[in-house]
Image (cartoon, rainbow, N blue to C red):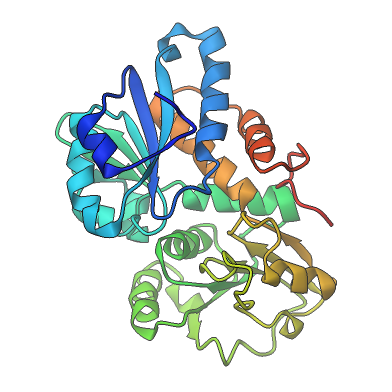
Length: 312
């Protein structure tokens, strides 16, 4: 089977995926470089361990209304592991057998593992985020002030990770008040939950400290015409900006942040680190994240630098 092809629910119903198949599922998904980076890592693993000789990672475009049908089919077709991206991370919680404690807190899963009774769910987004912030921007969540934009699956993971790592203050803003309130209930129920505040996007936090990090976990920036989700001129010069979007390489938010003199990075490094952790969960061996990063950069026609492949 062609690992560069984008498959559909019809393919899952009719085609056979031999060996040990893995996949990423999203809608849309054509832009994803996950197959390139996972298959590169698997190729390296295969050279030293024959257990991975028949492993392959595919890409599936599954619409939200078809997702509940697709998950049992993936299980029946013996897909050992699945990565989930927009918009499936929250919906999957009701369709799987078990959930890890962190994923339970986050209310979202991005990694599924085949088990005897069904898929078990994990969330590696928080792991990917904290490693990416450190690698790309030199930012550690512990003791930091964080402004988080969004309340979907990726934002949930980021918010919980911020609290687990001991951030000094967390501000969360989102367009949907209802979804924001749901996320606030989760975070404020955690230890030190009183260090988290919600805000309306039109009224961002005032009197910010000299240093901190703004994290965009919304979809604003995927399209060229999208406005920036936050006015970066409100941020002190010591702040950094991280956009979870990696394609396009430079969103309007990142361009405006750099123009304002702020350190900024896109989400490619987060994708790599969360992906490496997913592959470790499936394989039970250490995965070379740099191999995955180089493959992702090649797929995006970017310079092969292990720092998010970003410019400027």
